[in-house]
Image (cartoon, rainbow, N blue to C red; front, side):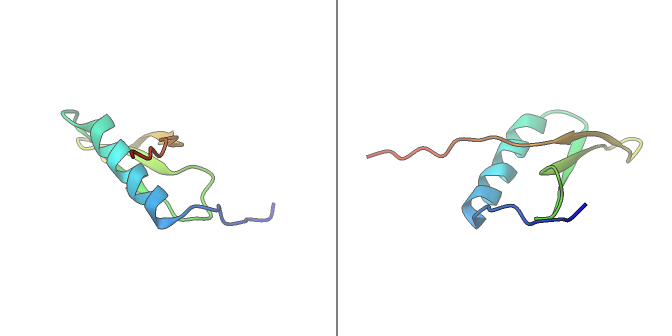
Length: 66
């Protein structure tokens, strides 16, 4: 299988990071944002066991306010 980079802008990655922060707020979980060749955006990690508990593909819309 050939790996191809995803076509994301740096602003998309920043939005993903903010979405993950909000999603995991108040939970005993953390995340690791993966590189551009990964099939998903992030791994969710349990802070107690330090094991990966989930993989996440983040879809967060970009809004333009006038």
